[in-house]
Amino acid sequence: MNHSKLLHIGFDAKRIVRNKTGLGNYSRTLVKNLLHAQDLDLDIRLYAPNEGNEELRNQIPAQPCVRYVYPTGKKHPLSQTWWRFTGIVNDLKRDHIDLYHGLSNELPRGIKASGVKGIVTIHDLIFLRFPKYYHWWDVLIYRYKFRMTCCEATHIIAISECTKRDIVKYGHVSPDKITVIYQDCDEVFKLPCTEIQLQEVREKYHLPTRFILNVGSIEERKNVLLAVKALKDMPTDIHLVVVGKSTPYTEKVKNYIAQHHLQSRIKLLHHVPFADLPAIYQLAGCFVYPSRYEGFGIPIIEAIHSGLPVVACTGSCLEEAGGAECLYVHPDDVQAMREALLTLLNDTDRSGRIARAKAYVQRFDTENVTRQLINLYRLVL
Image (cartoon, rainbow, N blue to C red):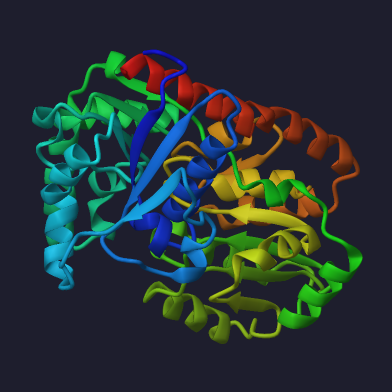
C-alpha cells in the first residue's frame, strides 16, 4: 500500500447512529481516533440503514472527509436490513471503497467476491457460549452471520485474547487470520471534572455521599444482582448506583431490593446522557462489574481512568481488561463480592493501587490502539 495515497474506507455505522453505549461507543471512538491520526489521508464513508439518533450522529459530524451514506429509497425496516445484509456491497463498489470495516460482528454477504477488502471486529460470541441469554431464533441468525462473516472477511479483529480463542474454537478460523486489537475508552474519562460539574451531577441525580458504581445494561448476563446481594450486609452508609438500560431482568433486581428493604440504598438510573457519565464515575468510591461474560469490559477501563478501584468477576476476559490491581470473584459468590468491595472501600493503599492500575491500562492507550489499527489496514491493502 502507498502510504501517501488517499484511502477510501467504509464503516458499518448502524451502531454509530443508534447505540448510546457498548458497540456504539466502540464504533464512534474508533472512527474519531482515526480522524485524529496524523499520517493518514482518509476519505471516510459511514454506511447506516437510516439517520438514527441526531445526538449520536453529531458526535462524528459530516465534513469533507466524512460522509454518511444511507440506502436510497429504502424506508421500510426490512428493506434497510436487507441492504445492510447484502445490498450495501453495490454501494461500496459505486463509492470506490478500498476497505470496509464491519464494526459490530458482521460483514455483508458478497463483499469478498466484490473485490472490496473486508475487516470485521468481533466483540464476543456470547450467543454461542451462553445461548440461554438469547431467543433461539436470534441464536440461529447470529450463528449464520458469524459463519458467513468469517468466510467473507479478509481479516478479523478480536477485542481480546479471550474472544480470539472463541473465534478459533467456534468459527474454525486460523489464528493467523485474527489480530487482537484492544479498545480504549473515550478520552473524556481521562479528564478530571471541575468541582462545579461534580456538584451539579450529584444534585441532578441525588447521588449519595458514599457509593459503589456499576455501569452497563441491567440484564441477566451482567449479573448486577450479585452486587445488590453483597450490599445487603454491608454498612448502611454504603450505597449502590447502577447506570444502565432497563430490561426484563430489572424487575427481578427491583423485587429483591423491595424484599430486603434496600430502596433507600440503591439507585437505578436509566437514560443517563453520556456527558454526565465522567462525573458519576468520579463521584463514586469504587466500581463493581459482576458480569458473567464479556468480550472485553470497557467500563473497567473507564473506571480505572476515573480513579476508581474495581471488583469484577472471573470466567471471561475481565482480568485481561483490569489487570492485577483489580479484585476478582466468582460470579455467584456473594460473600467474596462483599469482602472484596469492603477491602477496596477501606484500602489504605488506595492511591497506590489506582496508580498501578492506570499504568496497566496504558496498553490500551488511544495512540497505541489506533497505530495497531492503521498498521493492520495497511497490511490488508
